[in-house]
Amino acid sequence: MLLLKNCTAVELSPAQVRTRLDIVIDGATIVATGRDLAREYPQATVKDMQEKLVMPGMVCAHNHFYSGLSRGVMAPIPPCPDFISTLKNLWWRLDRALDEESLYYSGLICALEAIRSGCSAVIDHHASPTFIENSLALLREAFLNAGLRGMTCFETTDRNEGQAELEAGVAENIRFAELIDNEKARSPEQYLVEAHIGAHAPFTVSNPGLKLLAEAIQKTGRGLHIHVAEDSYDVSRSRDRYAQEPLARLDEYGLLNEKTLIAHGLWLSQSDVDLLNKRGAFLVHNARSNMNNGVGYNPHLPALQHAALGTDGIGSDMFEELKFAWFKHRDAGGPLGPDAFLGMLANGNQLLERNFNQRFGRLEAGYTADLTICDYSAPTPLCAENLAGHFTFGINSSAVHSVMIAGKMVYEDREFGRETAHLYEEARRAAEKMWHRMAAL
Image 1 (tube, rainbow, N blue to C red):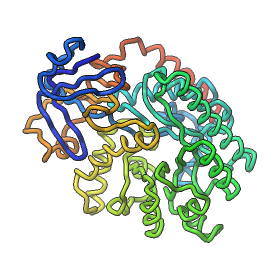
Image 2 (image 1 turned 60 degrees about the vertical axis):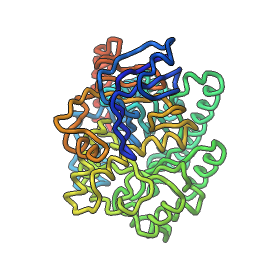
Image 3 (image 1 turned 180 degrees about the horizontal axis):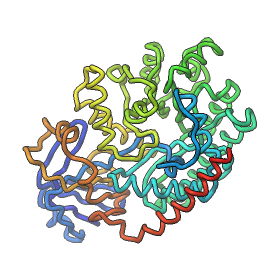
Image 4 (image 1 turned 120 degrees about the horizontal axis):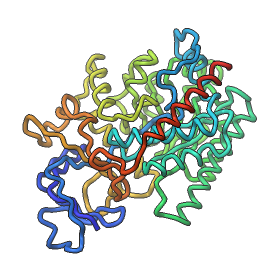
């Protein structure tokens, strides 16, 4: 049993700041909060937080760990004047160049850097068309090696090998969900990684593919994780080939429910937004990625009932993502205030609740002990009313002091408790080899 003493306890939505709070943790669960609890729990080990900010763990709600070795890529990349050429010339070559070694180190380094940035969980969306079978199990190994909570899935698509590729992607999603079920039953203490049923985007999944995905969801009890309307091309193709809006097409196959995660959604129609809300599904906003790819700005954020923040593979720094999301919204003349984006950051924990069957996102008894701890010295008063202002204009990932996941300090006093330099050396070697393979494609 652990007692975190003298915390400045911060909750993001609804905003709350409590000073000199004690938090008692037993195993992976918070069992009590209050002041001066040491006498009530004399058996607990006491750690004095010295008024550090202690908050529910931050969640990156959409990421691509397979892209972790793309940073500074040195392979010949043809000009990418639009979104589709960016996919074809860069990302769809990179994912075909992944092998077992490069995927493992990409996943492991991304997991370590997510924790260092203050994330307790990442929801991943994976693609490696030439290494499909057991790729998700390997990614799970990387998550567990780092100690990071998360979810992952395989990006089902027909863009390379048609129906055979669709079937292999769906099979990998089912295989991984069944592996998780078995591991959860056998070793619940290792239950840090969950499964979605993944697909790339409607424009690279045929109707037979959607049928297979629907069967996988019914079989496994998981939800769909897919990009939708990231670029206007996705919508145009859906209207041209299927005479439907993209989400209406997914819904026809029963693919929209409260476990569904839709990434991007910039070019959705109002009817699709209404359908998303009706089904209780989540949309994950990835502001920096949208700007990087030049795909436009999402005007639907004020109308969404369930929205969270992700990075789409641009690291896992959610402090930075929040700032970009707010500043871009402000620049676009949007009506939301910074508190709305703080709420979207907090909503990543709702996604965990929907999939892990645990309680996340509050500093209260009965909630999972996933915590982000920062040594932010506020230069002005810090209270619930101005918390969004401190996050938007002040605190950043350099303040991350420690991260607790499932009651275990996986990162403490800015250290992992083990040597990591050799892992980065291995990652650099794997990246160079992967770049050579990219150059040959």
